[in-house]
Image (cartoon, rainbow, N blue to C red; front, side, top):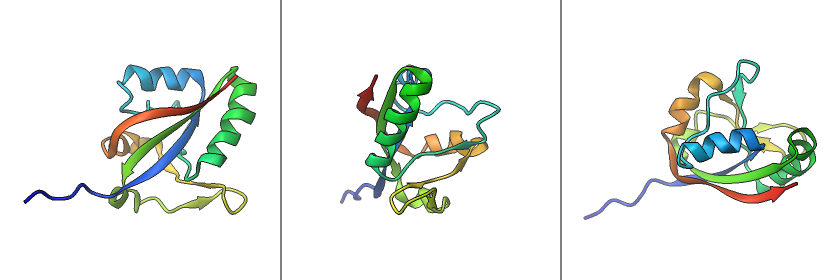
Length: 118
């Protein structure tokens, strides 16, 4: 008898070209460590919010913006309460930088690019 896979939650992450290159170098499996001025890793809970950030912020600041989609073990994510960062659909998780390596071990499958803006 085989056990069913653990449930996962879909997350999105708007990102710029530098961070995306580091994800690519990891084999599309890991988010890179945060920089000293980035104490929190912010994945978001809906695609539209990620698109807005990538298109309206990353393009302006980095020349390109990308939206990635990835799955994370749902049970693990329970430790991070959903944060409402504005309107009803502006929802994100706040993962402390020192917990990102552990967070990465709970990613199921690959991190995929689903939108690109220039």
